[in-house]
Figure (cartoon, rainbow, N blue to C red):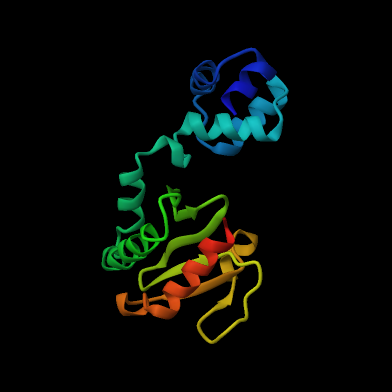
Length: 177
């Protein structure tokens, strides 16, 4: 994205961040409007610079900090569930990529196969991406994940990371290869 920004605008990301910060905008939308109207940015580049200038994108944070923030403010007791899920998928193969974002952690192979999100103080939503899966009482439609995942499992305690759940994770991993 940075290379494209330089090619399209003739200025580096760092230069655009300085320009934006001089304006002292308080809101993301203000930055977007400024870049689009004043500098002719496309939506994508304006959003990219706005996120970077406000340091509000996932890449502006250390991965450990992203995880710590996800499992704070009353969600600390859910972290062992997250850690168990990571332990399980690590055994699938060395090609598993763990990609923390601001509110969730994406698990990828060639494509995303799972998403771990502490959605509430009592629940982790485990999003899974299948080519085709039959819904059960436990394996629901994607719910809040939309098209990022095809299905969701609500996990409220460590014991729910059981053989059935591990089987679904393994299947999603295999289909992502």
